[in-house]
Length: 76
Image (cartoon, rainbow, N blue to C red):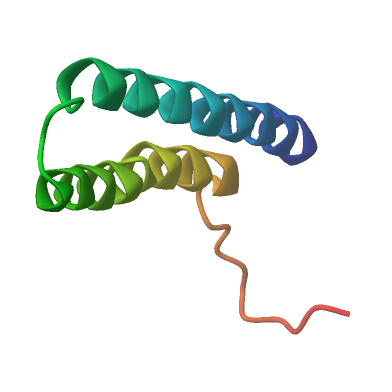
């Protein structure tokens, strides 16, 4: 697959991931944390705010593809 196509697909996937993840995290917070304390809210949003990075890293890694090994010749 051409690198430009992989980057386009990866970019669309990242945008969709962020939108859907934010909606899901907010829906869970509204449904489950309505009567919880502020510290529980803080911990939930801290954890869920960092958790989306894991699938995003996989998408970015896929977008980058394998590194090409060249003969050490300088690029121009």
